[in-house]
Image (cartoon, rainbow, N blue to C red):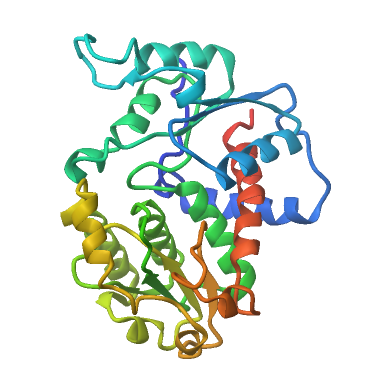
Length: 337
């Protein structure tokens, strides 16, 4: 009998609506109850090809609170470059192929959580998420995406739980996704993930960004199709004030411009002209008793003012805490016998 292939978690859409609801319900119960031992005798491998604070800490804590163990490795210090291309003649820097690394790691652990690193020179290449997909192709155990170029599904699960705790029923509520200025803009993974997650649960979405900071066309097409299928409003490229007007939640996040991708000098020059793109109390007051979300790290008094971050509108610490609980819910369901 052929073994059934493992269920990977590369993007939120890898889960059915029922599975998402089950994870959120279980996460809510786990948040209120004593730790379980769902992962007793299990080991989860964490492989980081770039830095992490909340993701690393919350995943290690989640596995340990469920009675499991982690193997926690960083590429820059614990192992070497890995080749991802099938059929490559390996005469470059990488001494090992992901095919072999994934096969061996699958013998040691019950799941692999990967944070890949993009090459950073071509958006068309990096958006294919070749690294994380190579791990999923060759692994014999579930692969969990800890943030690739296009997707951050772990953040999306935590965001959905936070939205549900804050607003209750999400259908018909309004979410504003607001671009914010940062000298080191983040990638697109978080905003792509929350955009599709919010539409999936029936929220109307407005996306505010300056000219030149459009989202990936493929993601936009998917979002527009989701909004149309559900009869939802999706507004793209708005100004900050228009997007925030009447929104119950404002989701602040910087992201890079695709036409300057791989050109940091040109990107920095453009960002320097965007000084008005920040969140303060005056802007938040335009919403419907609006609350603030941000995946962190956040640049205080540049992206968002201290008044908002430290005031009653902020959901940031709840949002960060929910990473722990939703990851426990995900691991429990993904690795259940």
